[in-house]
Length: 109
Image 1: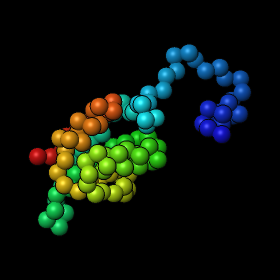
Image 2 (image 1 turned 120 degrees about the vertical axis):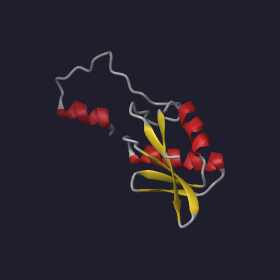
Image 3 (image 1 turned 90 degrees about the vertical axis):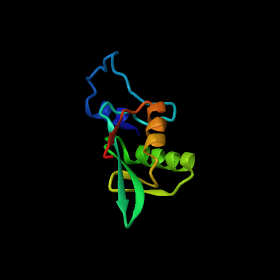
Image 4 (image 1 turned 180 degrees about the vertical axis):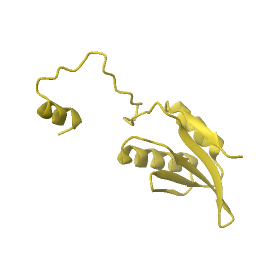
């Protein structure tokens, strides 16, 4: 049972408007209006790139993290609603996210 079915059960008299549009890309990942933040840090002397600010489902963000790691051929993780990529890949990550339809804001350096 997806969200639309649950809402239909809660509000049976509501008729959805025809203007209602979901913004998803070709992978089925929800694309938000607010920009995601791509920043650079050094932890224990090693560079990392952090992507934050996604307001969608955690599952979509995990799919996005896996795709970024495979396309860049690097390691990384998904922790505390942020994607951590090993190395300084801000430019490449921003290009990949813009191809997918996300708005990205570069922070730091």
